[in-house]
Image (tube, rainbow, N blue to C red; front, side):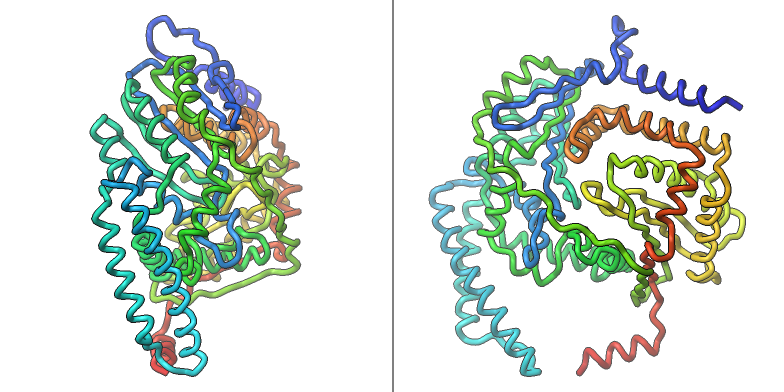
Length: 523
């Protein structure tokens, strides 16, 4: 058995040496800390660059510090909707004639806003009167005019032109994602096509066009139905999360509430874009076969011309301390499932690093405590996992343990077994062997996440956005290695308590409940 100090030293050597390129002449390349080149434009945009010359390719990750946490009541889902709209093009990409198209889009927005307003008013009035909603003649006329304008606007659209341009020039992995804290856009392409990326993405940042807005809003609504309303796990986590966070925006689904999605307008979306998607809220990580000096010259010529947006509004609302266990049941025609969450500090807090250790000890790998007890030995659960930063990291969050019972065992049995293991954390110090396994596991995860160009770009941009510096990816490992068995016992005793937990249980509907529900719908 190696000592903890030996394990820590091995981790440092891994982190120092893994970034050395295997190409001849680079056998003693500097560590990552020395290889990341950080620059900031006058408009506030941060650029992170790492040279890797093994292959003539480059991976780019553009991350904005905006997500569901930045949305307001009645406007939920804006960040996710804008992610969809960002691929619709600009004044020069995605259109056959922008000037003529814009006139039609303006008319479409006026009609669409009025149609939304009239439909909401009429449907609310019908509901209050206990009647089924039947559109009035005025609404039907607006709908016909709306459809005509949609069809006319569609004549100017060059569908998916941005993606096709990247594809024609060897781009792969074009994608985007929106979470609670961030929105990111990624692509990998031949190194000599970096000017194409700079031209397209600077144009998208400066001149986006919200074409096919209402069509895409409907796509998002259908996505919500598929991933949440008609998904047992989606519905479980949405309800569980909104129960755990009753004040903070983390309790609101990133995709948005259904009624909010269908009320989002082009004007609200454009205002959200102008607030949060300026260069001063963007971090671009570029990793691969690059010359940093040439890259910066290119970025200055393209992104450097974009003026900074106004200062980003800060987060105000804080979740008050929880004063008692919260439990919620979700009925669905699916097998039972369980989610348990404990409020905890956010990224950078000393106790957050202790939760990284707890997470590894409980569920990481087949030798972890909860997997060994629930899945392998007692056969109580089909699966068990944990998440130490749910649903985001920019504010205090949850440590979550989730499990699915293995029939004929129940969620109650699984829940009781989980609490037994959590109590062990409070009373029994973690062994030296377990600490070694934790550190080895964390080092392996870090190596895997940083090995590829895209993985390294992702990690750099992410941590620079949510932690304020990309160097967090290096310092975090040492902070975790400094955690002691006493720290684990203290943190477990302080946070993993009944009064601080929220429990969500997915309950399989019985035939009687199905009939009752059907009866309620029919009335």
